[in-house]
Length: 114
Image (cartoon, rainbow, N blue to C red; front, side, top):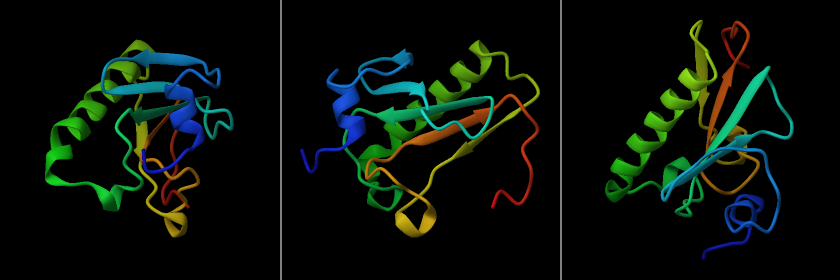
């Protein structure tokens, strides 16, 4: 492991979380500081610090994360739409040094996002 962060502890079962999806490649859970009525974090179990650290071999994993986002959005009846966000590095708003996708829904998303 490159580091120890809250997502790795959640994946390891050391910290409880409200899990909505779990498979061999990723985990999805409700954000503890929601920015929309629905705010899910989709986290790869493979440790990747930032979006900028992706390598060619991560292509299937990233596709899988997007398919999981589709499944969760469908399961949560977000038929009016939703937003996916990946923050990259501190300047891009990334707080936890582990790549993750925010799934935001349950209300109209404004543009620009901020």
